[in-house]
Length: 212
Image (cartoon, rainbow, N blue to C red):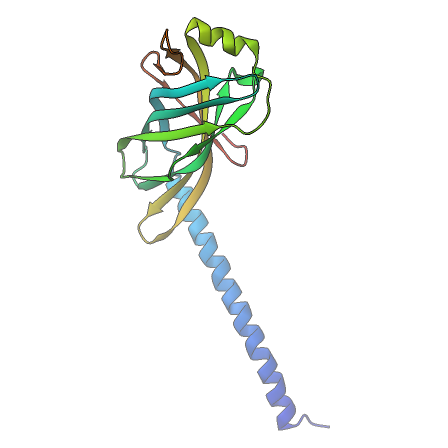
């Protein structure tokens, strides 16, 4: 029995949306592949970070808490020939004595966004406050070094880096910025204010996924 016109119409009606979906999926796959290839060719590098200053105020220690306010001077460098946006997240960590003592949470008053044009650098100030709510045993070495006048800090910042290149969709990367071995000299009398010793240090970056 020959297929009726109604049967042909129904078959055509079901094939059309499937073909349309297949076409849209194919276009999307090719579009995403073109974007990936374009970014592979451009191969943008992560911006560079360096600490130029570190000021500590209202620093205090108890048996189980560390408190204080921290103003960190950073230099951000864009090594690429495309515009790079750096967003400094509100949360961060301060580590004292590396593995010998754990991190304390630090909160920025507001989230900062820095626009870096190609092959440029900028200096920014980042303000953090530590009001650590966790009960932790403060090691005696920290108290001893504070009494001697110099305390060693590591600063860990979380940043989102956005690369922008013309008409291409932007590319985002989440990074941990680690600034290690920052010696802060505290005032000999009050012990609650201090400044970075030396001329500052470069920081290392690590992708959130674990790739350096």
